[in-house]
Amino acid sequence: MEKEYTIINAKTNKYMHKILVVDDIPINVLLLKRVLEKANYEVFTAQNGKEALDIMKRENISLVLLDIGMPVLDGLGVLDVKKHEIDIKNIPVIMVSAFSERNIIEESLQKGANAYIKKPIDKHELITQMEKILQIS
Image 1 (tube, one colour):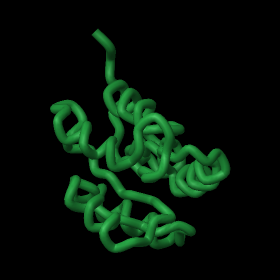
Image 2 (cartoon, rainbow, N blue to C red):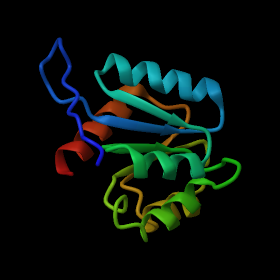
Image 3 (cartoon, one colour):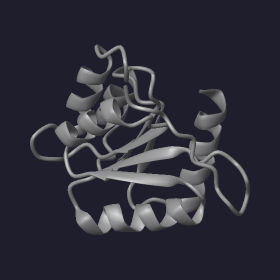
Image 4 (cartoon, rainbow, N blue to C red):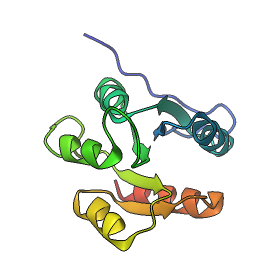
C-alpha cells in the first residue's frame, strides 16, 4: 500500500496544493508552472487528456488547469471521463483556453468545469479563481 505524504512549504509552513497543468503547448505549460510555483503550489504537468487522467488517478491533485484543444483526448473529453470516475470526479477544474465562443464556455461549465479563463491569462485572475475554488473544495 502506497503512503500519502503531505507537502508543507518550508517558508510558509502551509500545505502545498498539488496543481495539474494540462496543455499540449510546452511554453504555455512552462509559463503556468512558473506562476504557480512562485505562488507556492506544487505543479504536475501533462500534454494531453489521457496523461492528465493518469496523473489525477495517481496523485492527490487539488485542482486541474485544463486546456481544451489537445491531441489524444481533449479537455472536454477529460471532463466527460472524469465525471464517471469515483476517485477523481470531485477534483475541481478550471478551463484555460483560447476558445472564447460562448457555446464552448457553456459546454465546459455544463460538463463540470468550475471556471473558465480565456488565454492569454491574467495571472492575478488565475490565482484569485484558484484560491476561491480551493477554499470551497
